[in-house]
Structure formats: C-alpha cells, structure tokens
Image 1: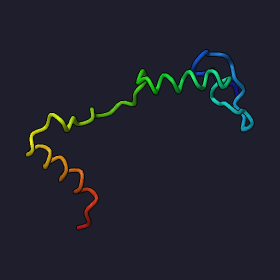
Image 2: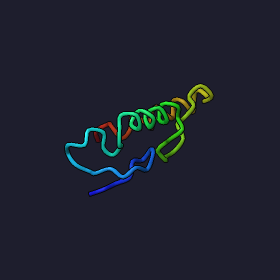
Image 3: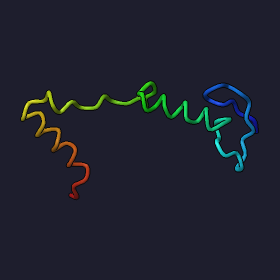
Image 4: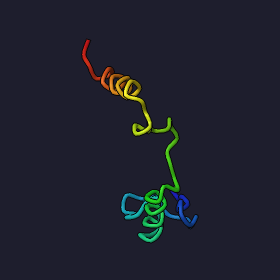
Length: 73
C-alpha cells in the first residue's frame, strides 16, 4: 500500500520494514515532531483548566470532580 508522507506528501510504501512510516525519512519525522513540540498541532478537546486563576472553591470542586470517577462505590 502506498501513502503520502504527512510532512512533504512524497509517496511512501507502507510496510513493516519502513523505518519512518508514515514518514518518508527521519528528516520529515523530526520536522513533524518539532511542529508538535512548538504546539503548532493539537488534539481537539476541552481546554485545560487554568488552576492559577481559579478561586479556592472552584479549585476544590475541580479536585473533587477529578477524584470521583476513580473512587469505588
């Protein structure tokens, strides 16, 4: 099966022996990693809570909310 490199769009053969799959090269793999490290990419979801700007009450409620799914009934 042939796929396009996510970085440069070069056609790449998708095989178990393809060292950098889905990328065509180490260079393209590192470019992509750099994009993630610089936060140019993100995964959709709810924004993280900024605990520094929360009131004490809101922070306590947030902590309790985070604990409750893990507590046994």
